[in-house]
Image 1: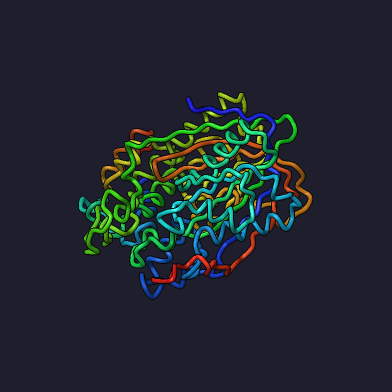
Image 2: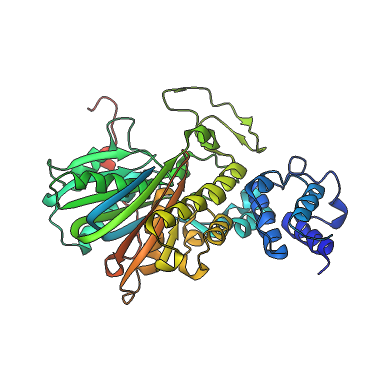
Length: 79
Length: 363
């Protein structure tokens, strides 16, 4: 599994956006459809796909597309 | 630690009621658009809820559940010495709806009736309150009633909540019998009271204006609408709740293996999935009813039991672990043996207590 491809797929499907939209502006505060329900859906899909269990602090601070990659690296996911 | 041991009191019957007004989530498509509704339904797992009718109150739903319970359980109402009604949607600001339910259910004057104002933790707290009262009194029977009509307190344009809250009522008969011990662990954290709040209408801010403003989640509300900080509630639900269940395991010397069924408050499917994973419970032991009833607050545990066992007759007695959690913040865990033959099918009701309406100048 290519981690970045999988990561992008989850973002595309969770938020209904194209890959072009996944950049530094794709943040919890900056994307209207990234609400609490979408956040739960994102976290759940990422945990399933990468077989990790996030700490609560990481769930709360999972605030952007790029920051999420850094969080996943801490759980041993190689991008 | 608020860890309680209740000796020789059992759950002797459970009945639940929903309003005869099903509301499929798709019916919100005109309001929020197909994509938003689809995303909500996929995210929360909710496909349908039941909303109270315009004149129907939480006590009406609890009353219907109680009458259904009495139709199956031949208990002499004169022998019920304790009644606890859990709701955050009382009929009046005063008096307590518990007293009105006492009259409507023809419970005796020798029955102590009390109201507990809690939401999603209401079943566990209500059960403990009723059992504690029964333990220090000579009564043989107690009655726990729970009712909620949270749908009436939601801004109709709040897509984060309006499709989520279902209304319902529950009645649980308690009886002094046997030597079983029901252990209960309760917790509260008032420092997080703003996580789920309806600011107006209480005595802190009784009559503010109805102006609408944009909240931190980008949704417009007035002070009279329920606000929920979804991300904070999510983190509470998947951290404090599993941790408390693990504490409960340690206090009682049990694990998930010791229970036949694990009934969690039906908050949403992601929270359920996360809690299940964190308490190492097999998913097949955790029944789900949120898809058809939504989040019914304190009723969701008895409603899920009725949904699971109400229509089947051969499940026998099960040992159930139950955890409710939510507004307050408030949460708890309990466990009990339940004879599933005394867990009845969910009924639908359109009953409204119209006698309870006051007409100006006529009282």
